[in-house]
Length: 210
Image (cartoon, rainbow, N blue to C red; front, side, top):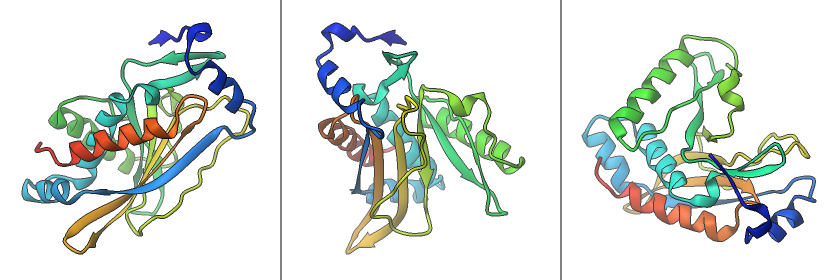
């Protein structure tokens, strides 16, 4: 982690402007082509969820602005961002998890499987210290329906700065399998162009073999 040189930061004015708002977050929902990633996952008997979650967190780590956070009234950049994702249980509840980042899909998938097992053998939210970490992205998946918009519970004026990404149900559009992706971020740290760069990275990764 390193502190941003605030006085020489090219986003200083942007940050101060958007930080004046009660809710400085903004968000978009778009669709990505997940045809190849889905086919690769099914062909190799892998979790499609694990595949796109891994590709997404790699894209996050390659997007500098999505690694920025607020800490003690300072802007900091983390060297590595992990996946804090909700995991569902058979009784309809969910729990929070912390999946350590790795460039290796096999290592990341092992971490994810361990977290799924822990959550599914527990009760409650599991709002532990890991759930309050800043070096994460908050992930959710809504696999039951297509999404066109998402709003999130958050405390306004709380200094919150962790981006939030949600995936909807994948669906066929002709011969192309698509999936909606929602991303919300602090506008003082992130602009639309940075989300576009993340999405470009994510889309390219979704076409790569594991």
